[in-house]
Length: 277
Image 1: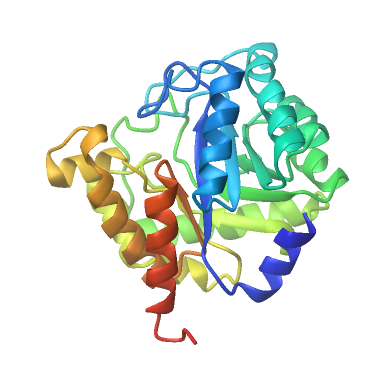
Image 2: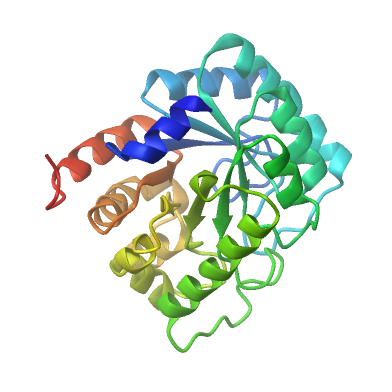
């Protein structure tokens, strides 16, 4: 936690958040880490490849996904978090919209709550985060995972996402979360068409103006598949290109499935920023 607080003050590098989905149905890696043992080994490998954060999710948020019971989500994530915390010293994020799951994950060793609903799905989430001074990622999503890709439309996607995030930042602060614990995410692929996703990556600097760390979750997503006409397994090069552009435009954290490639991309792209030392 202190390491994250120090990084928040300096922002002297781009953080790499490794995706660890302990789900059977996530869009790219569903079922690959079905057992706690496999998931922990995957986390250890990501750490050795340069991950700063392991982001653990027990419920798929792919388009069309349905929610699962709290008990089932806990059963998937808590043993993995506890074992990772015993094995290595690394920041752990819990990817959940449920306050009960977040509270247990934070007690088990997580220090970040990655909430795709930006504290809207569960009224108790903000207070749970504030109670332990955890970090929180507030993400923009139009609708829910089950409905978000049903004809999404915007007049100006960048300004609408920025306005939404400003409102959610205020809401988070109102329930006791310190501003220096808040990160923001434009929600690439969450209720957006290809044109919306491209506009957000191109104009990410508009969100960076809010002064909080910007998380870019671009890894192997469907908008890359639309550009390349390739399935998720063949979108690595597209992911690298998109992450490099996102970092150039102000991303502070990249959320990736391929950590080694993400780490190298982050280190080079960060040094190529006009204001880099």
